[in-house]
Structure formats: structure tokens, C-alpha cells
Amino acid sequence: MSVAVRRLEAGDEAALRAFLAALPAEDRTFIKEEVDDPGVAAAWVADQRTVRGLAVEGADVRGLAAVIPGVGWSSHVGELRLVVDRSHRRLGVGRALAQWSVLQSIELGLRKLAVEVVAEQEAAEALFRNLGFEPEALLRDHIRDRDGNYRDLLVLSHHLDANWSGMATLGLGG
Ligand SMILES: CC(C)(COP(=O)(O)OP(=O)(O)OC[C@H]1O[C@@H](n2cnc3c(N)ncnc32)[C@H](O)[C@@H]1OP(=O)(O)O)[C@@H](O)C(=O)NCCC(=O)NCCS
Image (cartoon, rainbow, N blue to C red; front, side, top):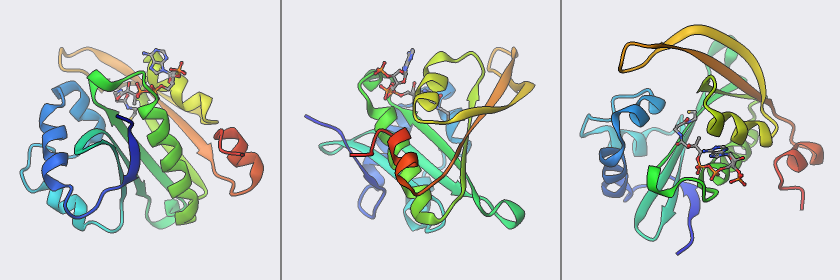
């Protein structure tokens, strides 16, 4: 069965809760929200400001993306958060969610989309670089993992451009 990416909508609450509950603790940190809260799925469906996308396979959620628009002097900047179910990685789900998120960001009128990854985490960095994101900042010891080890945080950004060259970078030129 193939995986499709679409916006989170009313009726997705149970499948989203199941996806979040199955995420290992380490992967929950990428969402940076209280995913243990039983009301979180309903709150996300009701939230019109953040654009959330699901990668769905039949009735099951395999991945989640969120584009969170900034406020004030960063209202032109979005933050992207992305996580894929471990048993469905390396199948193109993360790339599809990231491409969808870039297009959503353009539709929102954002000029820039930033994503924070753990430095030296090859998978995430390669995925975003291939879509035209560029490393912009390295924050030393910005992450403390569950074992108490410090890791660097890498910020990658995509300067959004609604013209063909931007689309081509995304692999969507055709
Ligand atoms: C990063 C993440 C979203 C990738 O999801 P995915 O569905 O496995 O990614 P894809 O299958 O779409 O891979 C797209 C490309 O990324 C790169 N990539 C993905 N996983 C990789 C790995 N383990 N090693 C090296 N490159 C990798 C490859 O270039 C890959 O293209 P290819 O398969 O054609 O070679 C997933 O590993 C994840 O959820 N990680 C934890 C959360 C996280 O780091 N989120 C990012 C910041 S919020």
C-alpha cells in the first residue's frame, strides 16, 4: 500500500494518537510538544495556525510534519518539525513530508523555512540538504540527550521562492 501526504483533519485523532503513542521517547523530542497529553490530537486538529501534515498508509499514520509560523519580526519564518515511524524509514516518507511542508510554507507566504536537527545525524541532514536546505547555524552543546550527553544542534534553512528554480530544487519542477 502506498503512503500519501495530506493535511491533518477532523477524524484523524485516533490514528494520530496511535502514531504518537508508538513513538519512542527519543523521537517524541523532535515534536517539542507534550505528546503524552491525551488532548493533544484534538488540540492539533483545532489549531488553524500551525499547518500539520500526515503521511498515511490506509488508516495508519506513518509520519508527521508541522510548519509553525513565527510571530512578530519572524512572522515570515516557519519552523519545520518532522518525524517518521521507525519501521517506515528509508522509504521516501520523510522526503515526501518535507516537500509537502515546503509547498505549504510557500502557500502561507513564508519567506524562509528552518529546521533544527541533531548535528552529525546523517539521515536528517542529508534529507534536508537534498531539498535545498542549507546549514545556517551550529549551536554547541544545545541538546542534552536522555543519557545526559551534550550534542550540537544544526539549523538548516530554505529560503523560499515560489518560482520555478525553487520548485526545481524541490524536485517538483515537472
Ligand atoms: C530524518 C527522518 C525524518 C527521515 O525520514 P525517512 O522517511 O527515513 O527519509 P526518506 O526515506 O524520505 O529519505 C530521504 C533521503 O534522506 C537521506 N536519508 C534518510 N535516512 C538516511 C540514513 N539513515 N542515512 C543516510 N541518509 C539518509 C537519504 O538521502 C534519503 O534519500 P535516499 O533514500 O533516496 O537515499 C527520520 O529519520 C526521522 O524521523 N528521524 C527522527 C526525527 C528527526 O530527526 N527529524 C528532523 C528534525 S525535526
